[in-house]
Image (cartoon, rainbow, N blue to C red; front, side, top):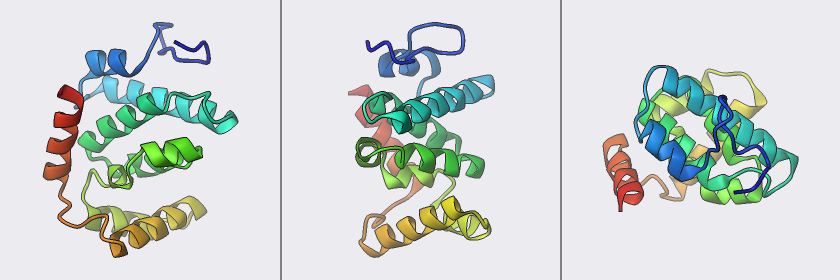
Length: 150
């Protein structure tokens, strides 16, 4: 493991396997706060220099937040996705939409920040390119469950 900040708030080594073991795919309560903190720390590292953050761990954190379905996490996931070229490729655009695609678009449209505007434009572009064809939260959730348990 790289010594670039892959630690949780208690000083325990954290990687994708440890996060999955500790929080599962559907964390709740205080565990969600810990996932947010972990994603924020990894995003900061990845923004500092591509490769300093653990993009596999970042993706898992985004999947965990997707399962929580909170609109307040949309821009946190967007920030992680746009931290670097590697994170943009690793973190699926659909992970912004744990509350549903229409709900996420409406929530972003109601925000007046540049980040929300950029995220909405990317969502609309990806939707026009059929990246959301057949999308549903349930179907995508099942896909991630299969991905992380097989």
